Image (cartoon, rainbow, N blue to C red; front, side, top):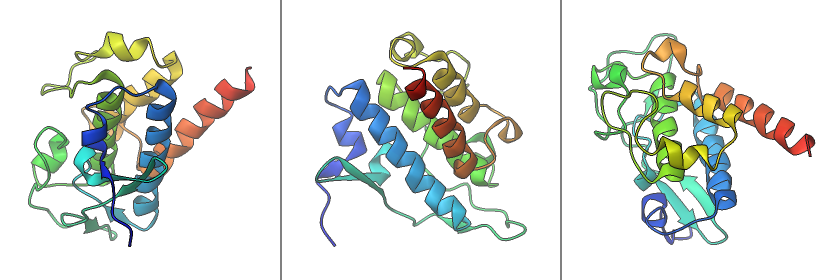
Length: 175
């Protein structure tokens, strides 16, 4: 297997165009949606776990904390990375919405340069910066991913990806 060049976290320390950040968003969504479609909850979504390869290709890595979601998920340990943990995962109850929450934080950080801190109030610091880069519907999409209550978020990354595609498709077709 080829070796990655750097992590997304390392790449985020340098300037990047909005177009490249949108491309990374799309790839990160696809990676987490792929895991969720296979009933895998990653449990440690963060920029350091997205590895960048030649051609700006992202791959999701480090499934060390991941869980397989059966009909019921047994209580977990609350493992993950502080700063990206959803409230329910911090209490030992990881679910698909936990990955959605962490992915929302990663995407917010990708565009704003800032990781929102607890308590996750809207709008978090850095919002003005991303508001100038993203359309209102994309901001609403991102906000839903970062909601405090899991039932207010996307059910999983598959539904999050479909919602994103719907927004992007409409934006492209409007001209």
